[in-house]
Image 1: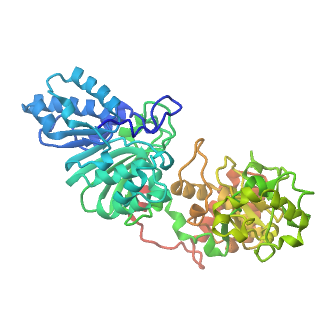
Image 2: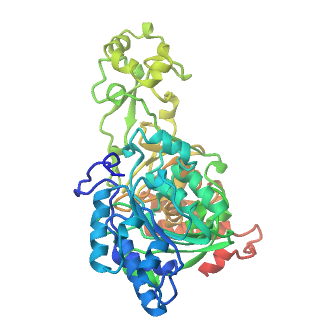
Image 3: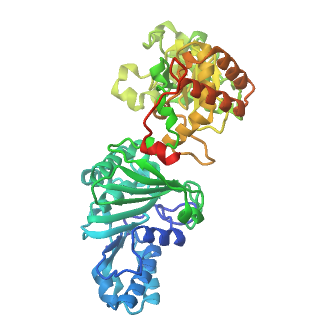
Length: 533
């Protein structure tokens, strides 16, 4: 089979989409991790590389197999044909791989018999003792449309808008013999994002998590890519209570990284397993304290509903000053004058256009574009509605504003001036003073460590403030913070002094973990807590 129908286009580096070749140092480490070492008899240990590319893993596999053959006296050619398997969708890469193998291992006859040019996901494979490699990085949008229904029917883990590598995980995990080992270097996003839900549950309930090495920022590949990599080691065994976890910023740290013992998840929620600070478990969630977390309005036609020059075109009563993520930069709030056209009344129902002649004329001039939206086609009578309803009262509520992706260290509180747009998350509830206190706590290392355990960082190390993560953050009860501490925390917030904020938050945390008699609560330490003591 040729691969001409399965190439996904060029990347900016000139390579094909999905091509990210692994650093040889990482290859050797991963083979050590699965126990494929030349000091043992490898003659019967079967191994599979499902996306072999130009042969980084295969070359090292055969080098080790050759050393083992010399040590234990078995035939290299025979062991290769019996035990080593590989495939790739790109026949040109396989040809380059074979050229390398023929040059380095001339005693292996017809190595091409064990390396197939195929769509690994749609072809049968033998059960093996080890699956190892670096699956292709192909986003949902780049998967050929004719393949989508086939993959979705075949792979239960193809959930939401999953990357292709999720399917490689499922297929290759099911290829393992009992007690077999599985080791991939791959993006870590599936362990946290929505599209990884089904795969996480499958791994947690059907396989054993042995070790995870988070390598965000490490030079794990042969070119500079934003892949958020992690090495995962799973086995086809009964799940254990704990697994090993470590974080590194350079491949040179692989063999001496500080390793922690974490409790294994038992379902699709793996968020807490990355957290190193267990003290947050003593506190309630933000929404359990009476706050509400939301996201700004999505209009489905920003060019029509959001603009700097709507005044005079639409009745003033239908215009709301709108805050955008771009207005919150460099720790400054600078509203640039955007107005949001609101076609709803105070109850969230669409207005009668006959009552607003300027608005009616404006909308009629854009009727074709608005009517072509999926929302309008589904309900033609509401063709001028936004995707999300707009409730004007939200503008006048005090609220914490959190841009989705932000390099800010400061967290802003709007006392009731603006309506948030779709790239801003907000928190409302409580008093304005309590919102300022909560904003200060969210600026602290205590909160940001939690956020870092829940969400992937974007390029530059910026966390993502999204409602799904905000709803999992645990913070001290804001309404119970002693007045003196609250006053000092607010002073530190006003001066943007993160060092002082961290200090006062630590005092609040200490205060919050004591009972009414002032005695520290006695708790049996968990395995996770012991690991960090």
